[in-house]
Structure formats: structure tokens, C-alpha cells
Amino acid sequence: MKVGTDGVLLGAWTPLTNNPHNILDVGTGTGLIALMLAQRSFAQQIDALEIDEDAYEQATDNFENSPWNDRLFCFHAGLDEFVEEPEDEYDLIVSNPPFYSEDYKTEDEQRDLARFTDAMPFEDLIEAADLLLSEKGIFAVIIPYKEEAHFLTIAKEYELYPFQMTRIKGTPTTEIKRSLLAFSRIEKPLVTDELIIETARHQYTQEYIELTKDFYLKF
Image 1 (cartoon, rainbow, N blue to C red):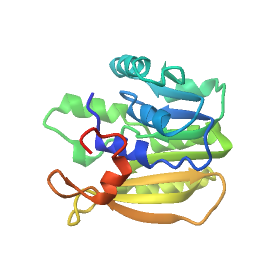
Image 2: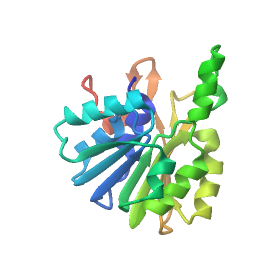
Image 3: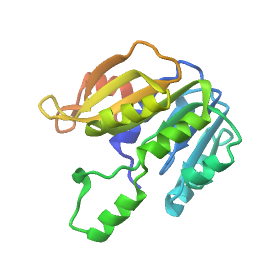
Image 4: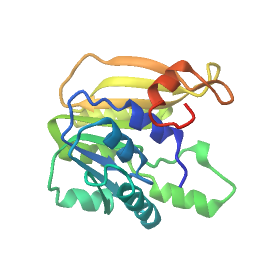
């Protein structure tokens, strides 16, 4: 599986202001975000959840071959199974949830159907975060910008309040594509800003370089 910009953004951006002791990465894929948070934090326990067998095996290999293999563990399970018998509360929950939108329609109907079936309903994700998040925990996600208002509405129903929001544009002239959102159980003033990734093809902005330079070899 490829390393996507969305995952890199979330792994680099996620606030660690509460010094999390334990972290949960929901839908870890190759394990990218969990690995980035292991690099960025002193969390003793970083659990990852992945339902796809191939991705789970790849994440497990990546964890075992990393310098933080004593802190990383991947569960081969869906979110619904995982929340049935929660063993821990987490100080940080992150997710780059698989979503389905018109942007991703291809000529391959079978693939589109699979992607649609794999998409994680936002309500399920937010409900699980509410169940598993510690009192001072942070819940951070990256989602399509057009889903932002819908996601915020559901989160409010579960008394999860946004305190940090960054909207992502590919270039200065393109529309906003993604929203990075961080929530807590405590209402705080909301800080919002915007991040542009490139000024031209492979010409990255200083802000993007500053955010991600610890993770890209070419920076």
C-alpha cells in the first residue's frame, strides 16, 4: 500500500499537548500514522487497528522492523469488534478513515463497490472515540472538507468539541480538499488555519516542509 499525503499530514499534525500515555490508530493501513506518532511521542503503548488482512500483515512487519517495536501493536479486527470488549481508555485516538466520495469513482465498478463497502461510517468512528477516549484525551482525524460540517455535527452529539482545525489546499488556486480536526471532551476556543501543500508540482511550501520534514528523506 502506498504512503498517502493524508496519512503523513495527520501523523505530523496531530496535537500531542496532553502527552499521551497510550494511543489508538483506527484503520492503520500500513501503520504509517502509528509509526509517526511513535517517533513524535513518548507514549508507552500504541495500538493500531486494521481489518484488511494484507494491510494488517504489512503494518505488523513495519512495526516489528521499526525502532519502536516494543511500543507498537496491531490488532487484526474491525472497529465494531474492538469496542465490544474495550480493555483500555486512550489519551489519543487518531484515524484517517476510509471514506467514499465522488472523487474516488473509477471505471472499475467492482473496485468502487469494495471501496464503498469498506468506508467507515463517521458515526461509528465518533461513537467509538467517545467510548474509548480518556477524560483528557484528544481525538484527531483527516476527512474530506465537504464532510466537515456533517462530522462536526455528529461529534457535538457525543460532546466531543473541536479545538484545532486546519484546512488543506493542494495549491494556492485550488479548492480546500481536506480538513484536519482535533477534538476534546472539554470546550475550548477553536483555533483554525489553512495549509497549502505545493506552489507548483513538487514545489512544496515552507509550511508543509516545516510540518513534515522529520518524516521525508528528501526534505
